[in-house]
Amino acid sequence: MLDGRCTCGEVRYRLKAKPLFVHCCHCRWCQRETGSAFALNALIEAEAVEPLGGEPVGVATPSESGKGQIIHRCPTCEVAVWSVYSGAGPDFRFIRVGTLDDPDACPPDIHIYTESKQPWVVLPQHIPAMAQYYRRSEHWPKESLERREAVLAKRRG
Image (cartoon, rainbow, N blue to C red; front, side, top):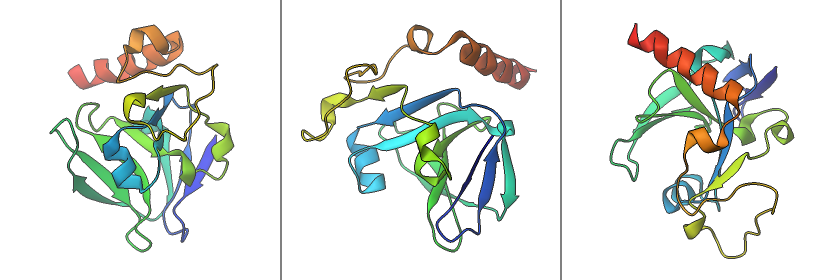
């Protein structure tokens, strides 16, 4: 289990499972949203995120896909703790790895949208890097694919 929090500590949470997959996104939208070179997000089932204190506020934010996302922020310090992307739906959360108490525990599994990465960012050779997005079936571990499918099966009823 991994714990995380916003900067002021009002919003606290626990990941009750290992993330499905960790994205390091270098798209210009993520660069703008974070004010940094990339966004590092750990994708996990929403039911595996246990609230430990405080309730983040969802802020509707546009995205390049046009479908938008809801960025969940602490109501006090306004730090983004996770996002819900329209494409993935409300059953999944994209946890901002930097809000984990031990962010070293979630290194990227893949670098995406590297065609727009900052030129001074040097990517490690042992981690897949994609110019744009990727096929989940080609990169995710079998266990993660199965966990994702279980959530989607519940959603279908």
